[in-house]
Image (tube, rainbow, N blue to C red; front, side, top):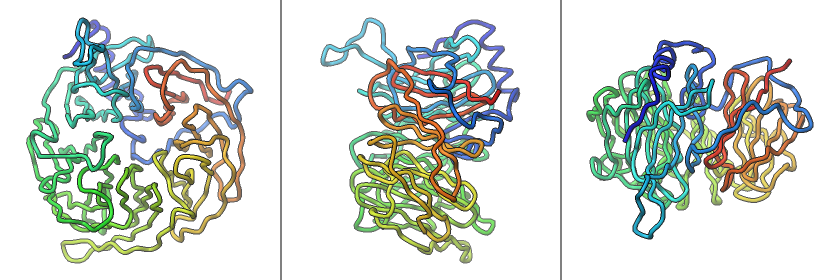
Length: 434
């Protein structure tokens, strides 16, 4: 189901597609390079006592943990929206899972595009905006392509119906799709189609990556991470964390090049891998740990060598993610409670520093202009200098929110504005230095 709001909104979208304000765009999960690094400068080095100035706040985007994508004057996210006059099998308000396009100047919806059936706490995917087309994945395994300007559906597939896909555990599909060249990369999780490449314009299957049993750890199926690109000595590869661990897939034909089972657990494999050159860093929680792999070209294949493995008492991260700045990793160490800010030397695994936390629960991490933006599950925000010289907190603040559920949606900074989502509420704050 798709709705539009007026000619002016469509004109704004066409301007966005044309590349207006492209330097400030945040077009997908974790930003332009999918690494949670914002390259903007001139941001506040310390927040006022009550936090940065609130520019606007809106409700009605639907329940969900999706973060936001921003291109030009449009913001894109996902949410579960009510279907007027319909009830589900339990007599509750029926909902549909949607992509929403919002005009940043007016904070009004421009269009909504249905993805699939609703879920009790909404979607997890962040839409991927690629010029004239936008892509998203629903919790039931629906992958949908729509026109960026209008929200009109172009094509759709379903992981279960079309590929025999499945999740490794119970929390449903959470991936944010990767667009690479003329392909969309996604993870149905089937043995014969663990990862697939689809033609981004027509949705046709380009290739399917089949996987054998990868080892004793974890469970077969898709996990909760999103794929990354690695160029290994000129060989383009997709790196993904699945239910049975890390895998590397040849971009040209979908051949499985390597796998690493030790990082898998049987509950939830979540954080997006970090890729730099020929190195891949990945962590999972539930008593697992973290690993750095070195990839090397071997004929038309790739070898993956373990450089180091950190046990969970040294480092594990549940779902807030890791950021690589310079030669150091920054994140939150912990499973669910008592998370600790930590800095780790990327190539050696040496813990440079760690400290007590401002909050007890899990925490998402974003980097911008020399600082780490930590967003805790309980809603607290912390600003910390990103330096290996020591833990240097600058500010803390707890935004007022009428949203419900944990604040798991990752923060985004775009054009000097900080975007925080909590349930069906979205708030925008000014973090430009004056």
